[in-house]
Length: 368
Image 1: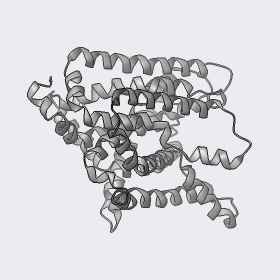
Image 2: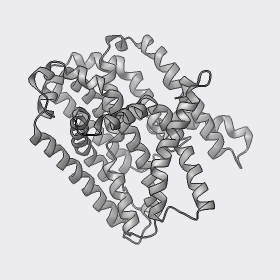
Image 3: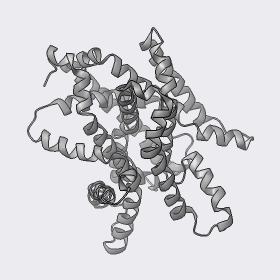
Image 4: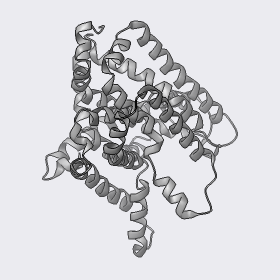
């Protein structure tokens, strides 16, 4: 359904209304990325690994759009520009669960076989770098963005040419991520640790784009209301994801294992902004549509959005348990297509159920 001139007046309110559903779509895409990430362990390229690569690359909009929506959300209330007020709220619902889950994953993944006397130092290191679980770097990223938001937002509002500034920040983001990918580790270990712990610069363009989305909602809504722009967005999404998939497919078909190839994610950093912009246009068009059964899907996505952080924190444990169970009792392994037909929807639903169950316990809402 197209966006009428009347709806342009309250386009920001419409996006705010669907914000939770959009976040739910992003969280489901994150789960898809991690489930299909097994392709990196395939010894050779085949139809299973090729399919996984396609799904993985198509889902790569998840973190960028979630960060963009976070910038948009924080811009809705000027109180978020007061550091102490924002930090108090973020501490309860972001920092506390991050510390708890970092402890859980450090114990689960690193404690066995390690001298208990070194555990406190190891835990602090994982906490500062977001490495206790392979997914916790994202939560450290969100915490850092919340920390800089009060100052960044006020600085952004003082800039005259905001569109040019957003493009400049995207260039900075790409340079930062590419240099971190290409440069060899520094001999100064303290410097290496400090740089590894700075997550927010790597997604700063998306976060500032959320500011632009908030302040220029009418312009963005007008663009997304035109069918040709939605078609262009879908084309960019498919073309960008396909380019990454082809490159990764070539690496998989080579003689060197994918994980040992040089800089496999460099192409992702370059194509990701275009891929995410195209996916965002399609997502917004869909959540506004009145297609049959779309309302039922929106309710499902809304539920996932409500428990987005809980699903994000818990899904690696659910994925590990599902993989172990299937491998032991059904002889299904990650090299078989039926494995993913079972694991992907099951991981999403069980993670949601676990988050909803945990939320019913005292203080459980702080963990979901």
